[in-house]
Amino acid sequence: MYQDAAELEQAETIEELWAGVVDCLRRYGIHQVIYITAIGVPAGDTRVLTTFPELYEGARPDDDPFLLHCCDSYDITATGPEFLPAYDYLTEQSRAFIATARAHGFLTGFGIPTRLRGAARYGGFNLGTTLERDAFMAQMWPTAEQFRLFCLLIHRRLEDLAGHGTSPEPALIAPDMPISLQDLSPRETEIIYLLARGMSRKEAARTCGISQHTVAEYAKNAYRKLGVRNRAEVARLIYAGADPS
Image 1 (tube, rainbow, N blue to C red):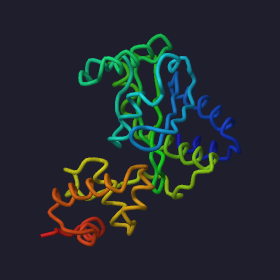
Image 2 (cartoon, rainbow, N blue to C red):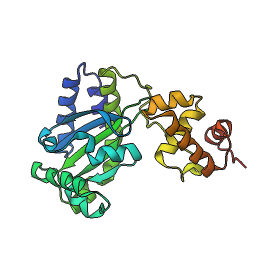
Image 3 (cartoon, rainbow, N blue to C red):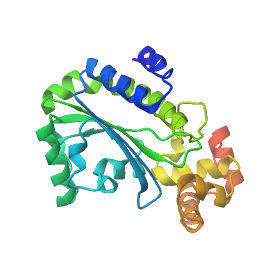
Image 4 (spheres, rainbow, N blue to C red):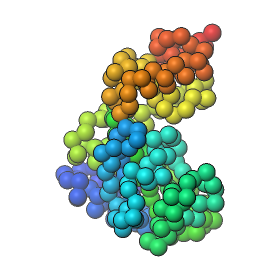
């Protein structure tokens, strides 16, 4: 799948790349594909590429529950109507939206966040299959990380073709953090990572599409959880694995 992505990265237009991505994913058992990205909270400037645009005829893309997941987590999640019983915290509106995907052959799938370093835009790929839950978990779920790498590479190329600058490294914005940071939320991790790299609060706010006040709140909460006082101590924790005490 990595070789497929490397070949697709040679595409010169978004249309050419998208057509190649859909064809490739269908060879790997993916029946429907959604690529959705946005900036800020609440979501704005939302953009969608999908094999079944009918899904959004009765709903705003901004309200797609997968997009909300991408804002709060970097984890791959199981998606589709077959997994609805596991997500009893979803609103009735979100549950109804997910249920409509069944009529389009999207029963189960991978929700893969694909935000890159240095990019304000977040979102990801929602890859749907026609498999029922048990078959999907047995046949497809073990390959989740392969799909993640594929999607990260394609996302980077889509961002390049759209004229959005990102780091050339195909990695999540907060990769390989020390285990001592595991109690932080994804947003808190992201903010302190950016601050530890030397960004100002203003720059971090612009990168993440949120206000400077929100950045300050995330940083304050993260510092409290980690028992540190400033960005220098955070940087030492991240880059040297030092204990702040």
